[in-house]
View 1 (cartoon, rainbow, N blue to C red):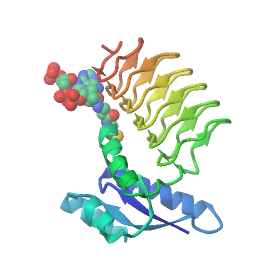
View 2: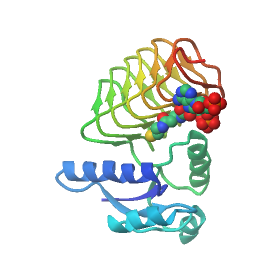
View 3: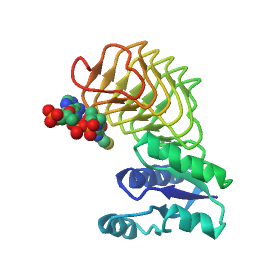
Length: 214
Ligand SMILES: CC(C)(COP(=O)(O)OP(=O)(O)OC[C@H]1O[C@@H](n2cnc3c(N)ncnc32)[C@H](O)[C@@H]1OP(=O)(O)O)[C@@H](O)C(=O)NCCC(=O)NCCS
């Protein structure tokens, strides 16, 4: 079994624990042993929720890195810029990213392997020939069209639909239920609001919302 720490005690942290539990239950023997959850400032309610599911709280990133212990890590935080910052810190300290965490109910097409540190939640559908970078997060029931390219640190929120041939550049964030039409590009660290319909390319760093998304 591989030791794993989950960074982030919030909602996505616990959803990631669910993905890990599902992976462990689907194999003959468990793949991961969860050492615990890391968070610099967990709220009391989130700590109670972790305790209720029998998961240890390990303190802040600095507390964990100071122990010198080695485990693979997954950054279970929705904000792409925060994921980048935390990943940079753990890489500098010589730690290893987790292999892609793919919920057994997710459908992954041919030639569509996600990169290390990625979390693919329940009900996700990824079509064929999709390139996915490091630390990509695909939330429940999102769909990724054929021949799309998702760069590092992309977040696709629940129910969003990415059409075929789309390029989501590094750190692009697509809100819940949004649609990105085919062959478009969403720039790096751009944000697409929940329920938006993207009908033209989105520049890097920009936030768009509505139908059509402006
Ligand atoms: C678009 C978004 C990124 C903007 O966030 P923000 O910069 O913090 O913006 P604010 O919340 O301050 O809202 C700014 C304005 O946009 C409006 N707005 C916010 N989100 C909107 C959306 N998705 N569609 C249309 N209008 C939206 C607000 O009502 C507000 O309008 P006002 O200026 O007339 O009062 C964010 O609202 C969003 O949709 N995020 C995705 C949420 C999501 O996917 N949640 C699921 C998590 S699992």
